[in-house]
Amino acid sequence: MRNLLIINLVIIVIAAAAAFLKGDSTLFIEIIGFAGLVFCAIAGILSGVFENGYRIRTNYDIEEAGERRERNRLSRNLFCVGIFNITITFLIYKFILQRLSTI
Image (cartoon, rainbow, N blue to C red; front, side):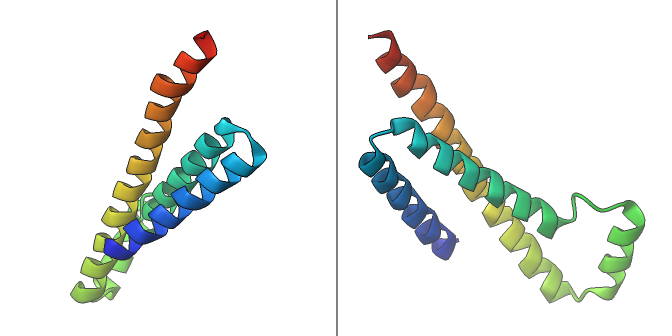
């Protein structure tokens, strides 16, 4: 989880720098939101959300317990980071940019 948070922090810093250099605050929201969607999609792939029941059962029988725990842990952590990014994107849009546009 710690490595994912560091990667997420780097993405946020890069997004802030790109938005500052371009002079477009919505670019920050787009980059952070896209990163959140990518994290959630990777978590879905790792957890097997996009597979049918037969394939999930086959993988469950073949896979070792330690590998399954590691994959589930990584999937859960990626999902949490993705939801965090999407939440940050929503909050920035809702409370900061909408108020700036009404001024």
